[in-house]
Image (cartoon, rainbow, N blue to C red; front, top):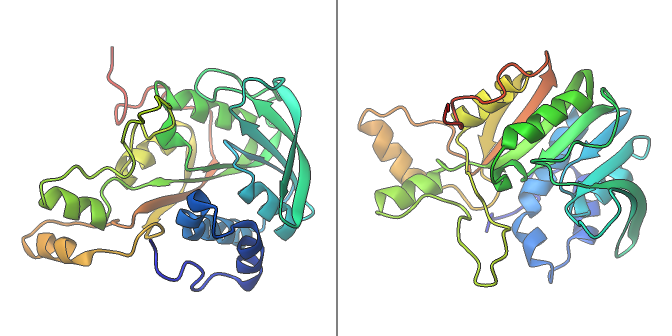
Length: 263
């Protein structure tokens, strides 16, 4: 686990998350640093207007509501027992809210809003779960964003310092590719490098900045240093990829070669 998840995090962000993420919540405990940095990156952009959060767990939604009370937040979830458009009630300790939610499969269902509805889309730890067609989701993100609207996307980095250390030890580099004994489909289906994700983002009509940070585990720099000393140019080895990108055009390539086999 990352040591000191709130190091250099804005006090307002830390205060909200310490209330929302409790010790018994093992998933969000593991993701505390990543969530804190996602919120901090978002706050730095001073977002206004209407935000869509894809694949909500509730924590980021409630945190945004507390930190940015003037924005409107809609969400998607994957509860197919709900109406396609429904009210999503979230209550975690002293925080609660009601949000418009869309129960959709992001790889096959259109987001049920008009074109150019949103100023921001947040896609945090979602794209790696896509099973068959992540560019369907990215194309929908392009469609629902206003011209020059922004995308904040995060996903694990398969070539992190920890992943490279695993490979040099003869192990798979993956972050979370394990199957589940209960046949749950909620695993990673494709883990990205900064280079493959950059190509996907550009193919979807976006341009911006992309970088990596260690958010899940402390860095393991020894193997990276040895590889660089051996003449390899190894960079971007944080375990989480962040990108802030603006919509520049319609989708440029529906099936980018970085992740699709051309039929």
